[in-house]
Image 1 (cartoon, one colour):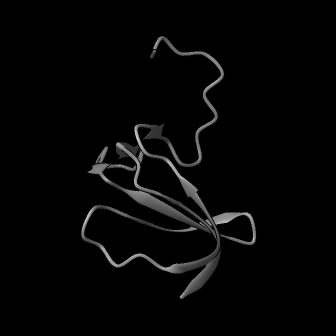
Image 2 (cartoon, rainbow, N blue to C red; image 1 turned 90 degrees about the horizontal axis):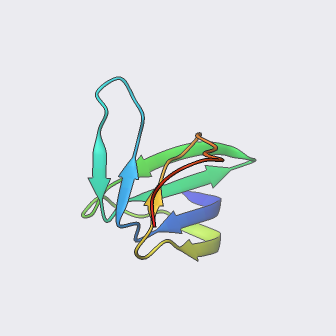
Length: 71
């Protein structure tokens, strides 16, 4: 699979799914502006046209957080 955008190497991906899964070392694949896949450390990472490193970051796919107390 090749995607438009890959956000990878996140400190933690908080999926906000029904299981509240949290993926250490996670990544998010985006295709045509939509989340196409989410994976954790050890899951196969797709090829991408553009890659963003999220090293040291908490990533919350699909959630726009305009107010927080994380530093």
